[in-house]
Amino acid sequence: MEESYTGLPTSHLLGSVPAVVAEENNATRHEVPDANMEIFPPNNGGGGGRGRGGGGGGYQTLGSPTPDTFEQQPTNNWRGVFNVSSYTQYFNIDTDVVVTRLLSSLNPVGGDFFSKIDANPDLYGLIWISTTLVFVLASLGNLATYLMQKHADSSIAWSFDVSYVNMAACSIYGYAIVVPLAYYFFLQYMGSNASLIRFWCMWGYSLTIFIISSFLLMIPFEFLRWTIIIATGASSASFVALNLRSYIEGNDLSVAIVAAFLLQIALAVFIKVWFFV
Image 1 (cartoon, rainbow, N blue to C red):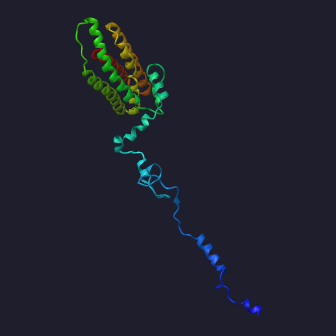
Image 2: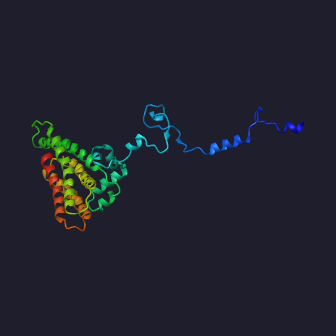
Image 3: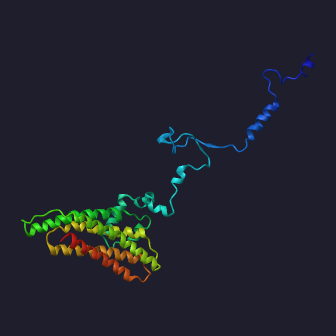
């Protein structure tokens, strides 16, 4: 009797699991076709979800691009000219580097300026130094005119000349932008390798010494004023000419170097004649 019970099927009994079921489960667990992997924690980009920083809910599927991916890609076509983010790299500069470049512009024979800015040329000089010079010329030019008039005749009435602001803005911005741009196209035409950003950087920093000399030009003595402005123009012109010569070394473009020197001298004379009469 006991042997007859052992031959009965037991798959219907409670708690019994056939061995073949375990094998099927193992096969199912190891043969999941092309599982779609997910990335956790949830993606925080875009949308109105409750993620940190206002990010969207849900999760990001592996390999699927997000809108942020396309927005962070650099713009290499013509639309990059009108994109502010394209110029952020030229303002990625700390105070120590700016001070070093300002001091270098005050020392014409202090070394090759282009080698110092080669790794990271900036537009600080073109924008902020030019803007500072515009307001310095407008304000100190009026003050110098007042001092000269009071020195000659204290009874003469004086009023602030607002046209100094317009003339300073047009002349300084125009010079700092147009002259490097003209040299860039000229050197490209002559077959010399030129960088417009580096030219803008150098000519922008070359205006630093004019900010300092503007304070000295308030001295109400005409001979001393001319001495100061000529020395200022010669220093700035030497800085531009020497660095331009080292930049285009190997090319017979001495005319361009002399022209750059004379343009800086002409700028110095213009500042004296127009703003510090």
